[in-house]
Image (cartoon, rainbow, N blue to C red):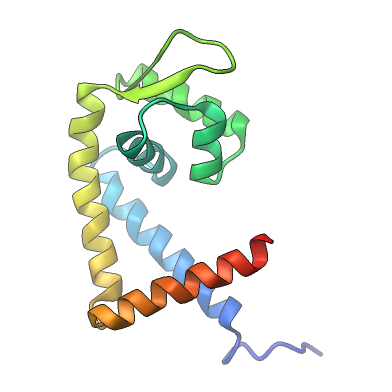
Length: 140
């Protein structure tokens, strides 16, 4: 018999929220011809141009091999460019990448706003802090 009460299990509810968020983001990003990992990669490069494959993989929560494929696709779509190649190649957004990201960011922000619509600013701040604490506790 299970020891977990799904009605009160925080991890279960967190996973439900994660799956719902991912599905909503997938739907919103489909209009921009992007996947969630592609969007995440573009967003990271907008905030920190010059990241490497390894940096982007870590921030996008995919393997380096998956990021290699993802970057190849983004390069073929002329959304990112690399500084020449090799293991330490650094990537930046192209003008097309910046334009695509602008619309996608607005779509993702709308999803987040829908998710948090019933929260006031203090509740949003507290939720962010508490989720950060949960992640930090398991990352040590």
